[in-house]
Each structure stands twice: as C-alpha cells, then as structure tokens.
Image (cartoon, rainbow, N blue to C red; front, side, top):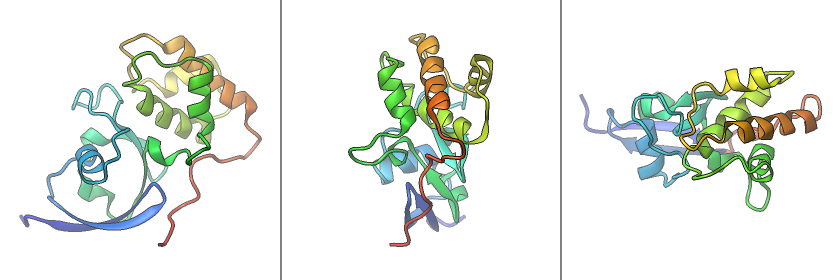
Length: 170
C-alpha cells in the first residue's frame, strides 16, 4: 500500500488536491488537514451523527468513510452551508428556535436537516424525526430541533435550494 495517495475533490465549493494517507478517515482529514472543525468527532462508530457531512448531496457519517473515497466528489461541511455574514436558513432557524444547548451535536443536525429539506416535502414532525434519526443530542434539544427544521420548511419557497452552488473551479 502506498504511503500517500492523491485525491481531488470539491470541499465547500472549492476544488483542491491533496496528498493523504490511504487509511485516513474523512472526519480526520476535514478537521486536521483542512481545519474544518465544525465536523465533530463524537462516537467514532457512526452512531451519534456529530460528524455528518454531505457527500455529493447526501448526508454521511464522516467517521465511517475514508478520505480517499471523496476523490472526484463534492463534500459540504457545516462551514460550507452558509456564507460569511449570511447564515444558511437552517443555521438561523437553530438560533431562532434555541435548538442548541451544549452545541456539540448541532453541526451534524444542521447538515442532516439541510439535506432533508432538499429532498423531502412536506415535513411533518414525524418526517423530521425520521429524517434526523441518525443524529443524537445528549442534552435533549429534540423538540426545538424539530421546531427549527419545521420553521425552515414552512418558509421555503417551492424549489429553492440552499445547499451551495457547486464547485468553484479556482
């Protein structure tokens, strides 16, 4: 096995190339190599969802994926959802609904909720709970998390997309 492999991917709208160890987990690559620390390491078993990111638009647990697997793909972390000075609607809704306590799980919930809002309508309380089943909040903020996601769903214009504009070729 080679000690380093080259990958090319689009992370948060910016294309890049990196030399990485083949066994490096995606969560560690994002945090250690790219300094995208919004992706949290929680359980290391794919249970808690704190490390959730979007892989080609689908939510995945980055602690269960090798970084080499993103070669050629688009990855979006919580940092890539909003823009400086303009939060993603889900980020703002979490603030407005006070859907955070300690905040450790919040990035994973926000990313998972943003993906769910892109693919599911209508969003009942049951649908939101089902869509976020892979994320755990140890503080018990579930009622406010559901309230935040439902508020975004009710405010969205039909067909509007909030998950990035693709990769910038710079």
